[in-house]
Length: 394
Image (tube, rainbow, N blue to C red):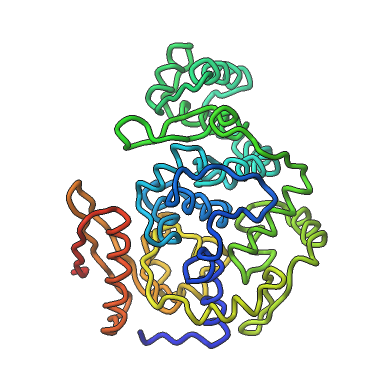
């Protein structure tokens, strides 16, 4: 590629690849160890345990597009398959819900509780006007809460369609997105979440969070703010407090107070003329590992490597931003990465027998980049356990 990135920014990107477990060294250290003060759950086998470890390490993995979110975990657990993600969902070590920003994420269930304890109230208040417009009031939510408890108590599971039928049976009209917004509100209460794969394996089932994945720890407000910030830096650094606030939507004042409390657990590094936060005691090791980061990657859309920070640069050059987010409509395409820079996009077509990938580089790739990108795409096909065909955009 013709684009050149200054050395300091290049090191920033390489070190982020390491901290996000996209390079050797991070996820290979001890994938079954929490290291965050929380309890441990049975990962349901080595592959599922590694997927659960990735989910804990990233803290929250954006997953409104379920298939992309699944690959975001898989690409960070080399050798894993989609079935490993399914096992992690089926054993309760990973769930899917709305921990922050009103957006679906794949997440450890205890971490979900930690997020909700400090984000849910403000997120729900921010949607109050929309809910009034839908005719959703406190009485409506209370009735929906009773429906959910009655339907799911004792190990019950329900698809979205089954839950909608139950709402109708209770006299609650689910049309006009009311049903989905009621699910959203009950999830923000911590009552329900998306858990195991439903019969047929094409969608998840709703379950009662506390029944499905009982809490293994308690969170005080200060503990939640402190740990979320520390672990965000661990899984995204080098980064900044502004990045964390943009990512989590937590108040700057609360985040700054958390930073003051955990300051001795963090260090600052200078890269490309700017100051960034990293976890204390790990700076030299991360700097060495940055040199081992893979040259080419095939990342999903909405990946933390791009969306985990306030600015898309230097990972994505401003002139190519519209190629990743066509029409700037909030939909992020899967990305080709070379030496830390996003250099193109890719699309996939999946059938029961094969996956076909169409690549669209921003500029012509070198021979080395083409071979590296094809290797990365073969890893994606292996994750799906399907043969691969690669095509270039016409």
